[in-house]
Length: 413
Picture (spheres, rainbow, N blue to C red):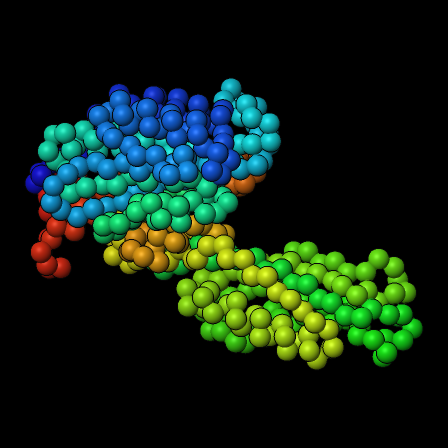
């Protein structure tokens, strides 16, 4: 391996494959599929991997797949892409717009999938030439948007024996050719909380003879978030924000029932695990003070994605080698949720942001989760370079017998 020109090898691969990959991405974009319904997408991926001599294994529910490249001794590194689309109408006027009414790839998962496919094909050639110092497990994950797909992968043994895992996500705020990196939390935990308050009801002229449910609900809405902020370390950024409130139907009657729904977001794993019990205790305290009963349903979403420092260093090294100096830049913490966090509760790894904006241009179609979202397709080649180099960097680092030995030789010219 010492003295190899990885950048040149990737150039040669992409010279012959980039247009095919762009066509593959456009095909996925035209035929988006929702969570746990990605049957066509799974078939298309499996067909291409099989044609390259690989042996993909479809997950038990029939969507998503896992495929391993390489064999023999050495570490195992996983690369993950999500394959599902969103229930959002495609509003773009492009030849490859969605053919499925009300569904489109508004989050870039078609790009993630295509990048991992391209990376798979490149690594397969490396393995065939005897140049892969370990194994790479390719995870084409269903149902990230639901979420739940990561748990399906894990239940099927998808990360068993994996030493480290990496993933990426499109970012329309970052230029093509660049990647955003961050050590520590990069996305937030995101849960849902449903609260139902009940009381005897009554006349608004005599609130002292009943329980003023609307007033009590208002106190719950304001006091729970405030009290919660005083029960946890402020650095955890634990927040409760309401999105729906409902109570009563007329002005002069105190209702006997009300409800509130909101989201809980958090950057700290420990605070995330403690949140349900804390919120329940605070809710019972506030509700009891105003004579109403409150019932809470707490629905777990995803844990925070907390990037391992060593894994981020590997991402930075890979980016610098194949994308050039200055290609890796700091990225901001997001309060959005991403089920990649489930993997990082079990094994170290890191999640990166991939630039999809044409340099010097405004966003092609606004932010992710909008029907106008699109990418500069040059990001596909960038992503393949970045993920392939990341896998090789992690494999060679994993073979080092000591932390003081220099990284074994991928000389990137």
